[in-house]
Image 1 (cartoon, helix red, strand yellow):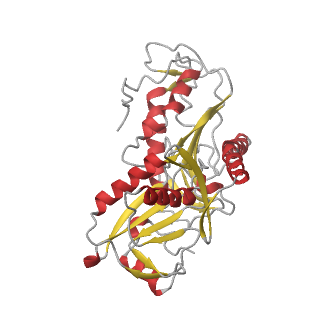
Image 2 (cartoon, helix red, strand yellow):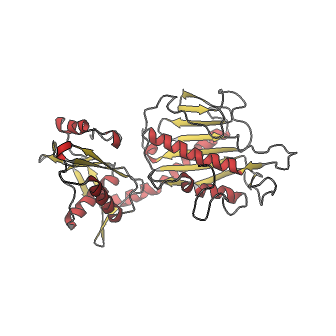
Image 3 (tube, one colour):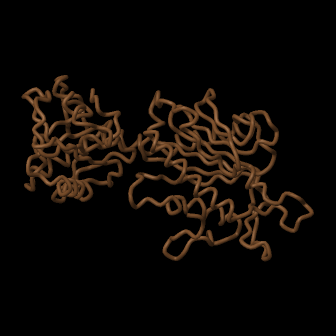
Amino acid sequence: MNPIRHKKLEEITPQDLQALIDGEVAEGRDLDFKREVPGNSDGARKEFLADVCSFANCVGGDILFGVDEDGDGVAAALVGLPGENSDEAILRLESMIRTGISPRLATVATRAVSLDQRGPLLILRIGRSWNHPHAVWFKETSKFYSRTSRGKYQMDVDEIRSAVVQSSVLGDRLRNIRDRRLELIRHGESPIALRQGPTGVLQIIPFSSLEPGASMALPSPAAFNVEPIGASGWNNRINFDGLLTYSCAPGDEGAGTYAQLFRNGSLEAVENVILRGHSDPKSRYFRCIPSQHWEDSLVTGVEAYLGKLIALGVVPPFAVMYSMLGVKGWTMTTDASRGTPGAIDRDQLIVPEVVIESIDDDYRPWIAIRPIVDMVWNACGFHGSPNYGDLGEWRGRS
């Protein structure tokens, strides 16, 4: 077993690496040792890509460059990479992965750990891919690899077919989870009492939560002090499902918003405060959703919740799903003086999920969930959200 697998990359220290030597840790299904980074020869590149591909198609794992091992694969010494520029080496490895493996891997991270005079030691962490099977493309040929405790091997036709089937049913599993939770909410089985009326349900499901027995160490309620969507003040507490933040005391008929962190790392945020809009039949804005407030709250909510999950050690990819309940006849308004072109024609608006594969420097929450935002506007008769510019920039809150 890989003893550093469950530590965040940025938290791994030279002492953690020395413990691999002292403990005589062996290579296995989720751990591989390399004395040097791969060279530029065809053979070295192909071998490296096969290693990475095998981890992604299996359970994920770490490749450590700068570790010597004995003939049985047991860590023998931290030799480092003397004379190696870690930044250049990382860029070269990432470039090989980007161009040599298909479909593209989104679950790869790297870190250099200084060993002083011995130079850096590089850790390449490959997450389990949910978009598998991946293949190594090299000189117009493709091969699929997976792993056992004895190392990588080339997958046969039956294994490839099985991996394709498993990947294809992922969407069904996500939608089943969503439908089950929506059914509970519709029947009043939510962690707090909700007002009658239109209700928005945001669900963020990390793919890792789909693993049998998936569980995370719950933080303290204070550490999960996230703002429920549409709340002006909130409380938090531990409950049977995990951790809950909510707008007021449980059982209060005026409660209208909560965020539930489940023990498997998924999150559900429900509100019927913003979506209530103008519910007075005498108002000329009757059944109008305050569009700017709704969109701002959804986008900033996704950003805050994903940031919190990442901080708690939950890893991408994430499925983000949004639904509206009890909204037939309701519509958006962009300007209270202009009216709107149409109304939602169904009671339940179930928007297709979007998948966020990584949280990197290019990640922008408003871009990631734009398909969800646009489809809700579509349901109200608009071509799409008017709050996006031609280049995709969002004109809402920062």
